[in-house]
Each structure stands twice: as C-alpha cells, then as structure tokens.
Amino acid sequence: MLLCLRFRCLPPPPAHQIWGKKSTAEEIEGYLDTIVSYLTEKDCDVILLNAPPQDFKETNDDIRTALNEKIPAIAEKYGAKFFDFSSLLSTEAEPGKAVYGGHPNGEGGTVVADAFVKQFGSMFE
Image (cartoon, rainbow, N blue to C red; front, side, top):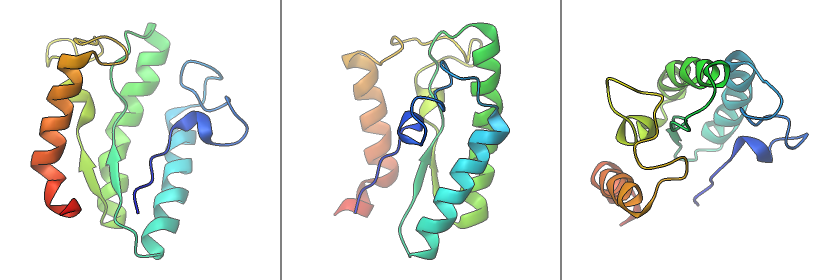
C-alpha cells in the first residue's frame, strides 16, 4: 500500500499548511510522530520526505527548515525510511530557494523521480 499525506489533509484543513495557519515545526513533528507510529505499528513501510523549498517568506522558511531538521529523527525513531526531497530541489548555498519552482517543473520532477527510484525502486518490484 502506498499512502501519501499532505499537511493540508490533516484536520482541520487547511490549518496545518505552513503557508496558512502558522503551525510550529514542533506541532507538525507531533502530527508526523503520531501518524508514523501508527503506521509502523501496523507493519507498514514508511518513507518520509522533507518539505521542499517554496521561496517562502523568512518566517515560513524558518518553520520549514526546523521541520526538515526533525524529520530524519522521526524516521530513525520508527525504523522508517527517509528521502531528502528538499536537497534535490535547492542548492547547498541557498537551501530555501526553489531551483525548479515552488511546484517543481518537469526538470525538477525528473531529478526527484530518478533519485527516488534509485533509492527506493526495489521496494516496488
């Protein structure tokens, strides 16, 4: 089973959008912890992705950055896998800048898809 979650799907929508209500990184971490805990207890394979760059205002990018620092630890805590989505769509010098646009263009989508298949393709064979 493949399950993809977007923060805006969590109740009450759209309260958990980084660009909507200003949920803190800690609040979002709590939501993710609850979800990943439940899924791993049910023996689901979980792959967590970090939040990509969106050319946010500084406050929102601070939330995104703090959240991205927490996600690998959640993956490790529950034996989930982690995919560094964000680093593929930005540069080390400007990690908050969306190189391929806020919603990655075709080139960015190809970069992400190729890296994802390289890292996790065997899970889907």
